[in-house]
Amino acid sequence: MSVGKLYDVLVRFESRKHRTSYPVHKRLKAPYTENWLVEWITKGIRLQPGTRVLDAGCGTGHTLLQLAGSQPIEGIGISLSKEEINVAMANKTADTHVQFLEQSYDAPLPGTFDLIIACESLRHSPDLKSTLNHWLEALAPGGKLIITDDFLEDEGDLTRGLIQHQKDWQAPQLLSENRLDSILPYTVSQFIENFTTAVPTRSKIQLSWMIFFLQFGRAFTWGRTRQLLNIYIGGLLLELGYVRKKLKYLGLIISK
Image (cartoon, rainbow, N blue to C red; front, top):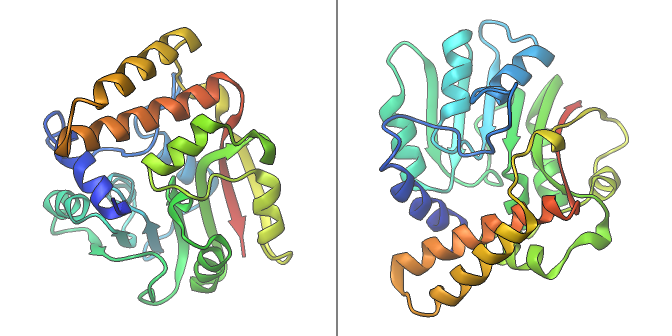
């Protein structure tokens, strides 16, 4: 299943409980709110009227729409998921200068940007170095690239469970901070914030039992139900990676 189809399945399921755009990324524990990403971005970066923002992997448009609601930015959100783009467009108001496109973030981008946001989307890149260079080329001088994602504590921490997560979520780029540093050009500077302690997790025993029973039950399902189980199990395996201290959740602000 492609990345776009994976998120199509996920959005169709989650739309049962969400009537508007919603964060597809992680919810963090208190004191962080549902809008923690927008709050963190606006705390670290001063947005001006007319700031050009690209959300590379925009989900249902929640982050971009929240930013546009606080400042008259010019925003473009892109996603491979048709269902995500449909939700984003349905929640766009006429007075916001925001558009949403169904396309790859590796495809040619419409112009240059003062800010590029990649929240839990870099992991889906088929070619990490190519994607990062593509984004940096699309940044205006002095522009910022924001990456928030799951990182391996160490390159050797890629366990069997995390490998299965990569397969279930079409996420080949589960990488360490050191590997990212080795790919980024030396001409950029970084600010890093560690959100790991705010990632909500269940106990190792609870997660292990949930994964066991769901994997057993998956053998008796097919179609969309099996697709949803694969996605859910993959999410549990990622959560187990945090419990086992194999992962950390980082926010990076990269300045060109």
